[in-house]
Length: 174
Image 1 (tube, helix red, strand yellow):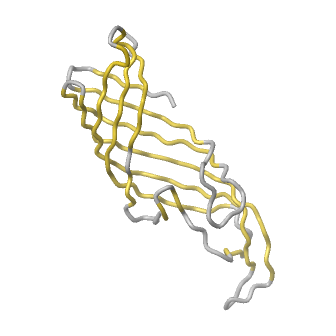
Image 2 (image 1 turned 45 degrees about the vertical axis):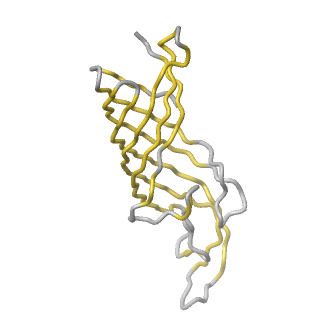
Image 3 (image 1 turned 120 degrees about the vertical axis):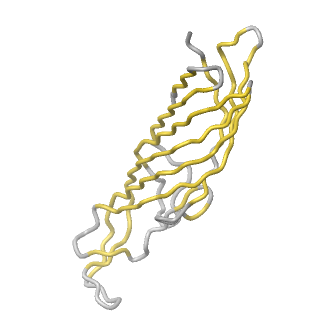
């Protein structure tokens, strides 16, 4: 990830951090294979600096599509299905959220002010929207999909806890 921070005043700056998603660490609970997501996540904030400390409201937007395989029942009525099939489908996850974060920034070495280290954390909420595409005609999941992340199960259209944190090395271009 390569981000941009523009400081227009001694106390004010803005950051834009795009991230390309192409790998997921955890595998889903209802699938045997690893996840192979593809998408983007954009974070932006406006920072208020007090010497080497900053506070910033942060906005997060994300879009990820993941190919998964599941078992579907086709033409089901009252729990009885005409037949079952295993098929690949696409799970689309959209995210929108916000947080307040606090951080420290300082030079890595005293003789070179261009290289800096930044440490931040915060708390906020995010909302998710999930869609499935590529489901067979007349098909329904035999087991409904479970949406998870590292903190637990994600609920659609309900606030989910977001804890931004990070350690970033920055280089200042003059």
